[in-house]
Length: 88
Image 1 (tube, rainbow, N blue to C red):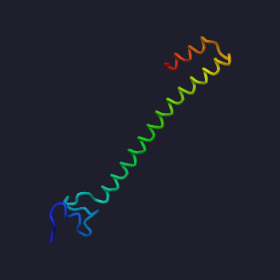
Image 2: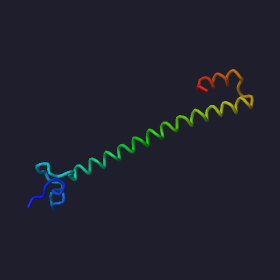
Image 3: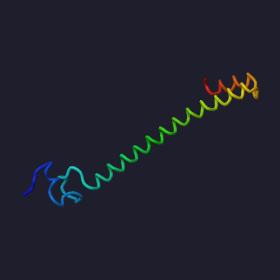
Image 4: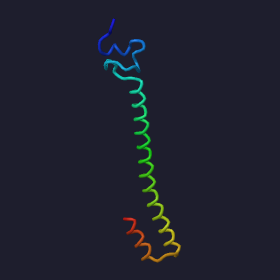
């Protein structure tokens, strides 16, 4: 007895086999879906870390220049030039 549509997936042994397209998703489909989600999450994590690290680097370098200016290690012109270069 063949079950129509959605219920064909529930038949024993039908998942993962090549058939006439009655299965909603095969084992290969689940693997591809899982790998796709993993790759997408990894890309999001990499982009987040790249962007957050960039802004922290700019801020910390400007703070270093400010401390050097306060200590008298650099002139006001050098500090202003570095600040403008940072875009702040």
